[in-house]
Amino acid sequence: MSRPDWARRLPILLILTVALIGALALRDHLTFSALAEHRQALIDLRDSNYALTAAGFILAYVVIVAFSLPGATVATLAGGFLFGIFPGALFNVAAATIGAVAIFAAARSGFGDRFAARMQARGGAVARLQAGLRENEWSVLFLMRLVPVVPFFIANLVPAVLGVSLWRFAVTTFLGIIPGGIVYTSVGAGLGEVFARGETPDLGIIFAPHVLGPILGLAALSALPMLIKAIRRKEI
Image 1: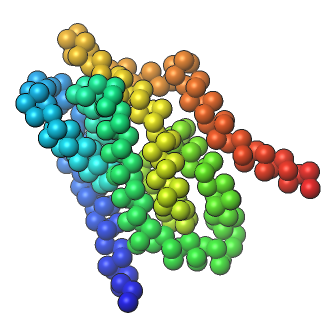
Image 2: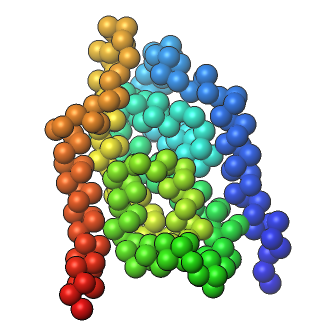
Image 3: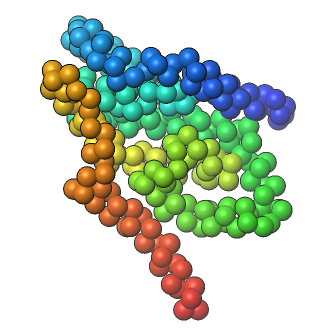
């Protein structure tokens, strides 16, 4: 027996409601300044119970991403600050992936399957976009993660409503955010010196040539299958 529409849409509506409330209530709390203020308490907690702190951090990060709360970048920095580049990067990437999958699953349950079928039947530009995405799912999803022009929250919703495979979404999210995750985790790992100087971290490092170049190279490699398909069509 299928669930009624309101029951299927309840999870995504709850996420959107919490996201709106969180954007208003937490924007001044989950900040770099808050991390700097509470850094010693966090270090003491980690040193007294590493496993519990790691589990609590991952859970908090999942909640931040799943409900699109402000502070995801600060959480990534905190992961590096508390746990180092490794396992900090692993904690960050795993938590972000779990949170993204939660949004994807909620959106797909509430709107995805019916919306995808309706768009396919209707035809037009959206249907062509849907068909193109399905034909090149791996490439498009990797590109959305490697070159995050699309906001993370939107990149979780669009594939869900266009009928993308959950498995492919999860794999490309996990692998695609690793490069950026490592960069920002490494920035977090060096926060001790930043705090000592009373400065703020340079998040623009992601655009430095030695960092951006390899990421764009991976993006070009991800786009290669689409390019090959396009060339083959022209030759036919």
